[in-house]
Image 1 (cartoon, rainbow, N blue to C red):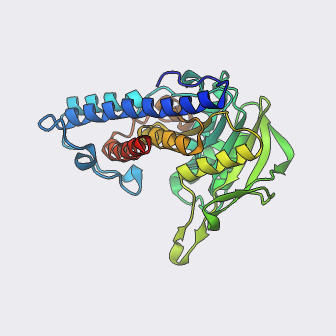
Image 2 (spheres, rainbow, N blue to C red):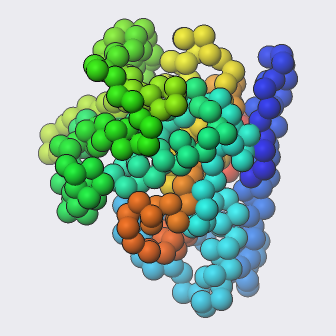
Image 3 (spheres, rainbow, N blue to C red):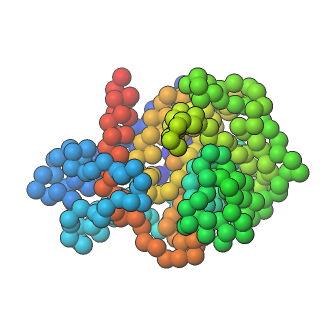
Length: 330
């Protein structure tokens, strides 16, 4: 997506920019979805993408092989999706989209992916983010063999939880200066009250250091644990964006963009979800994604883009497009 943000001079101009950005995202996404259906199902090019593309599997990495398509059609479908960042070799970073001076949210997950997200942000020197928030769960334990190996190779240790890994990610960033003690921020949210934000130093937000003068903040992703290893009330992507929006507004920042950083695999659907969140917050919310080249450099391998996950992502993209269109029409 081309540059879409410039500092507004009035609240009216700002609201117009948020709306225009959401409309731009929707038009581009719906065009790509239509083209994708035509590539995968040339006999029924006007079919509903929600009907023809399957729902994503609960664990995306376990997606079955892509639809029964020719290699030529698979290549064409991947090429079309790459227009939004799926499987793209290069980063889709902040500055190329015009997101300068943003509050940046790095998404939790596997160690190498978290490091790729954070590295993409600081390597983009023109972005000059206001802060980098690394969101991670103190509940999810690092037990998977691949994650254990990844942590050991990247950090020389294996943290007990994803939240521990977030600390290691911060320390691994070039130029990171760690504070002698974490600085607990006067900001919190309550998962038992619809993620209501309030000003108390609960430890859910802690500044642990800085890179080139930009504070690096760890955000705990809370949840309620249930019996049998189940849990609920864990804020998802949209809720995390909403929490950060409220926290920054409470500190006096109402206009700088918020940028959620994730894998290019999820960019098509989450770009729409972020635009929808922006409408709710009356604030520009965007997505930045690392490319496959950066991920492979950090992982130390040469893996290809996860093409098998594309049909499910197209389904999720169509679902988010429907929600955004409804919001824009209301």
